Length: 79
Length: 436
Image 1: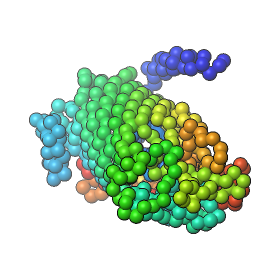
Image 2: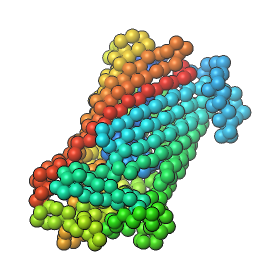
Image 3: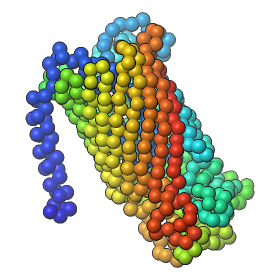
Image 4: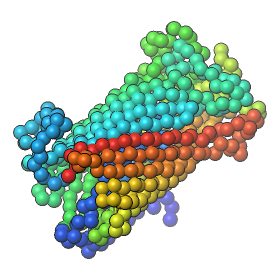
């Protein structure tokens, strides 16, 4: 399969994966009264906003990749 | 955040006043959390940075959530200017054009005049829309002497399946303005010799061919899925697509032009060495996908994350991170973390240009666009203070390595370090008030 065909199929593949993922999500998880452990400190993505923001700024300044878990962002002319 | 009425402290009152100034007054203070942090960053012999940050959220009785963030940072020290080292001493012109600096034989050329301060602020408002949907809007501004960024952002998130699944759509746009000291240089123009006094006037340099100010637009679109897998396991998946248009060249970075046989610097017109200002494409399309798994192990918590990144400049990177939160007491923990990063070079990355060879369309010797590996190793300590505030202390070591001896290096450059290792020590302290 050439690169052009792959690019055309990617959105359809993405929708299919998203649909399957959401279908799978319905059968996962916990009841509302079982959230005690999930509510503990450290169990939320990006829990420590200060540390993760400072890290993000450093990596934004020193490396060529951005985005993913944080913002893709513009924001500074970092050296 | 739990909705508990508390006696408002000074900080809380100040935040409530700030929220009032933002036009969201009318609802009494309900619950406020403010996190503050200070960071010291040092690369021995190179850049030093100091950063202060305050981040707050304020929940109103009507369920709206106001957020703000203030950042100040100061940078000083020396930054690699992109030129290749040489077996002879080399002289360079500072960005102002009025003075020069020297790199000793074999030394990586560093711009020692680098100095900047930045103020940034952002604010946002999250509004519940029904029981399961939330909409967020925000604004952002960042100000440096030679760089301004203004942005708006928005997000829409909805919970599904008894709140076990959350899907978030988000977007942002930044309008950046670059006003380099001495004006934006013409791409691939030669670095002129210093002219004491004359080029202190920015307008005069622009008359000499400098391009003045430039602009750049950055648009992000993202989608995120957070899924509760079990009572102890949470998975977050995110994708961000970024489109950047406009000026993306670093106005302070140059490339050496070397003799194709000896590897020594080629002479310029009126300068002992020829250095050309770099040139990058004015369009960039980035794609980043990331997964984060948080696993409770009884007492402790382990977090694993992986990020895949590619862009149309030819840069591909993979990032893997693992942290382990060891809750050795109910209110105290230590958290080691390890991060691996690998990046392939941009298509137009060149360590130097060869005299007499045709100029490429684009070229940059910025080490941040080269092939590299980076490792971070950190340790964080967290404790709850009397009064319920949270304190964190963290120390981290960051090391960046690249190909310091490329096999195709020319002549004398084979004996020189063409990609020196960058080491950095990072220390930060964080204090959170009012956490529920």
